[in-house]
Length: 295
Image (tube, rainbow, N blue to C red; front, side, top):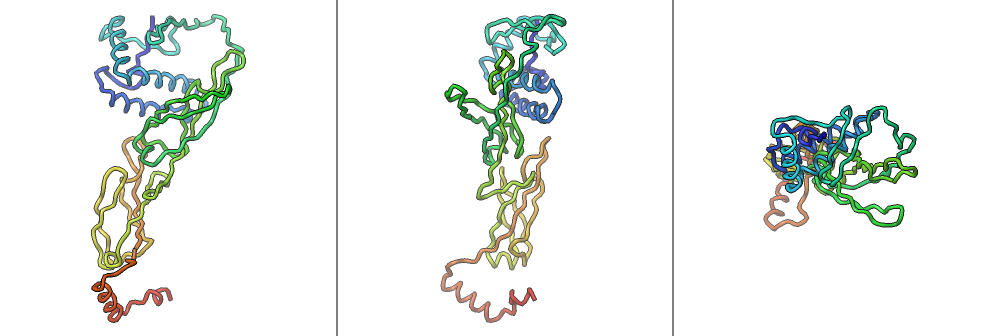
């Protein structure tokens, strides 16, 4: 009897981990072994299938406890057991309540000549925040018989624009008994009023008053997860940019792109009487002429 070691599949060394740690391990494993990153690798689909299966069981406290109890009852806490493609025997699927026999090497395969069903491709839109932090999304698809099918999709944190998530077996069914096709979900990250994403860099506008731009100041710039105070040099112009390293979008392995703050000098639409007097005085005494600067 052979069991799959779900903790090992997710890269965890022990079963004494929290649900949050399991989620983090799943996201890292799913991103590392994504089939689209291993084109031509026939084992990639099986690997991601095992990763999804492991997460499905271990991310729910009740099924995790049941899995741990069953594992310990058969193998004990120290004995190792792991199902790989090269191992043949019986896999007990205690969560589906059935025993499935693997085909032995050399045994005739009744599905040898069967063909896999067609893949289905779709796209989902994410906000920058959803893509940055990761999210569980529900998508609805219409099946060939006209029914609506809802699927839950785990979006790993830091997923990139144009990346794809593959749901094994959620595509069109085979016409001659083969495996179902897959559902391939392309990610589109939408810009918003505050941030624009370009590669791993985030762009945002930093609004300054004319006197702040002229005199220089310190200003707070909001990133996706906090605020950073930066120094604005005197005489800065609209359109100039200030780079804030490491405050952009996630690049992987704990690194991030940059946050680019683009300066926009904003003139007040309405002035108090005192402000108007000051501006009129400034107009009288100043020799600055922006139109002559361009000559």
